[in-house]
Amino acid sequence: MKKEESHTQKLFWPILWRSFFLQTSWNFAGMQNIGFAYSMAPALKKIWISSMDYKKALARHIRYFNTHPYFVTFILGGVVRLEEEVAAGKREASEVNRFKASYMGSLAAIGDSLFWAGIAPLASLLALLIALRGKLWAPCVAVGVFGIARFLIQFQGLRLGLRSHEELASEIQKMRFTEWAARFKEGSSFLAGVFLAMLGSHPDLRLNPQANLFSFFLFPLVAALFSFCLRRGLNPWQLIVLLWVVFTVGAFSEGILPR
Image (tube, rainbow, N blue to C red; front, side, top):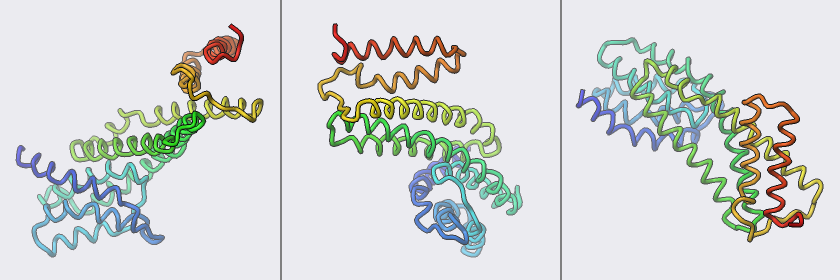
């Protein structure tokens, strides 16, 4: 068991590193197939000693493959484990392709919802608020938030795939990606609505660089509060009163209203 864990640990970082380049050889015929095979190559070289066996295993992964690029590591980790079992005679090679096909569509949908409709808009809006404070490093915030989220997903995905390939579906469900995506979308949508409404009423809107921390985080806090209240089942009048209180406090903190 210790030998198997050591073997997997040595493969972890090379596979993870290569997974970041999944789409560099994207093509219309096989989509991400070349990138997937490239990511699998370090593991296949360790698993299949014979050069002929290695080429056959690599050829299995040149077939059509397409999923969300940041969720591919869930599949990569599981496929590494399956290839080890195929080499040990415990499984048929056809099961590897069935495993890939069973996960790539669902993970693509989860990834699109979480990243493109959730994390990306939220990170962009956060960077926009910082930019309105006159900070030149605002774009770095958007890139940093998005990049950290991507790395954590790919890291955890490969770890779970290698550790729990047979229960991968239940492990993914435990991470509640769909719920997190909904929260991110609610927060970013509400934040965008508030921001656009303020721009519509005040086209020359500028945030004060000397503003306190409360005013800076006012809009993200309101978005999170609004989402929480919706889940608690507050009625519209309660939400209106709550928002009025929050914005009144924020206006006093900014000196917009007389003290």
